[in-house]
Length: 147
Image 1 (tube, rainbow, N blue to C red):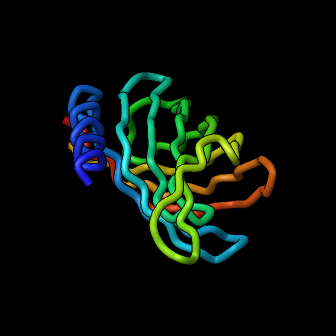
Image 2: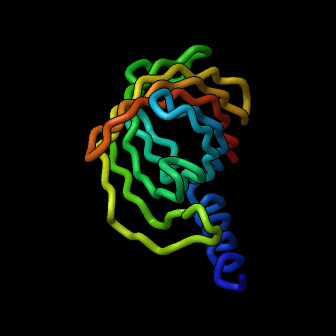
């Protein structure tokens, strides 16, 4: 359990250094499962980046990196497109407990989204297509807190 605490501490420290914390929920449109997202966000114009841990996605824990393109800068409604990659880190088998399964599934991720810029908070809605061994689509709602 101590390793997970250290991992979460490193994640929060990287989010603080990066400039934003990304929290989201999503739904796998093919299998019907829900997932949670915890990550960091690096602000840039017209490109931004984010790193994410997806809990519950494909029956386990996945890690991903995305590069976001925001064509019109900081506006109230801001559309964006993103491309990135995600890979399986651990699985949750039916008998319980995480089983390390690094790299067993990898995906190329293409995302279209719409963000609402309101001060330090930035709520967003997005739709992702994950192309890999078992392709699937994902719809998500989230919030980036910038500092």
